[in-house]
Image (tube, rainbow, N blue to C red; front, side, top):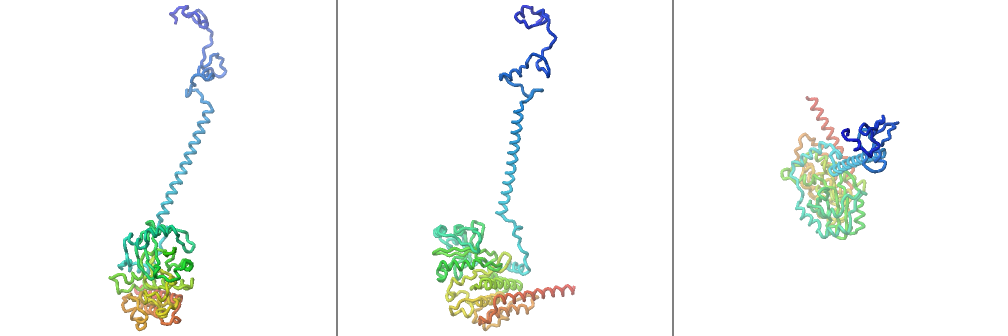
Length: 458
């Protein structure tokens, strides 16, 4: 600009300097005045912000962000953190719930510890492993389901009624589930057909379908039937198979029991060709005899009912090889004169008359069962039994090594007392149980003495 003449700057009275020949003042031009600055110039950014025109300068060194903006940013961050924490808590809860759901669906064995098996139970387990035991009859699921009940009839019953659960237990399955269950026939007895049913592929139960042609008038009266089932359903003992629920309609009556996985005593004694004629081991006989006597004594004392159908096929073996009576107290369903099956178990006073079954009738049948258990032979009817030497009959085929024959004879004597012709001369079920337990105690003492002798010899 120094090369240009003064005329080029005419009309700019505020200019100073050598070219326009005007002296400048000593104050410098200030764009960003500090505190207490006396500069008259206003910064462009400040001027624009004050008038609302032009962009504000942000992020430059020395610039300041408005306070309201900082507060909003801090609030947004707080909200974001809180939401993240809530989501994390919800995620943890969902994982815990899913884990617990899996545990419910697949319970661990720790939740239901198996009791330690006794020596007798272990021996019985070995004998079952060696035996060729099968169900009485097995058929494909579809055929069994058809025999159990026609599909149309099952749907009709499912709509018309519901199961009654016993002893105040909560409903754990519906009649509709029972009707849809796959099933296989286990056997046909004096009151109906027994099925093993699998509900929804998980729960296994036993269903007894009563045969309308076989049951007596007592069972055909709805009120009487329900009253009897209510009493039977309250029976609870480790050596009884519990009645869990029942159903009745005009044409159908169903009884539902717990499933026992190790079959029947009849199959254990008579079911294997390889072991036929070979009795069970002594310890197995003693355990089963005590278990059955426990269940029978409970029925007679707790309910004052009678079992009415003691036989080896009505003794089932549970998961720990405990012996359990089934078909408990169903004798009311039948007229005594009409029962022709299993005559060997029937007491002589009930063979030719309509005399009611009594607790002493059960004791007679238990004595026959005891002889069957000891001998491994089919039960004998009373007419044959009366002329038989029971000691020879029961013990002739036994090969128990190291077993005191005196203890075996004591069990035969108990059976002999049970099968006396006169009901009044037979012991009660409770007395039978105490006698068996005395033999068991004597057996345990004898084993301990033998162990002591072996220790002293060594």
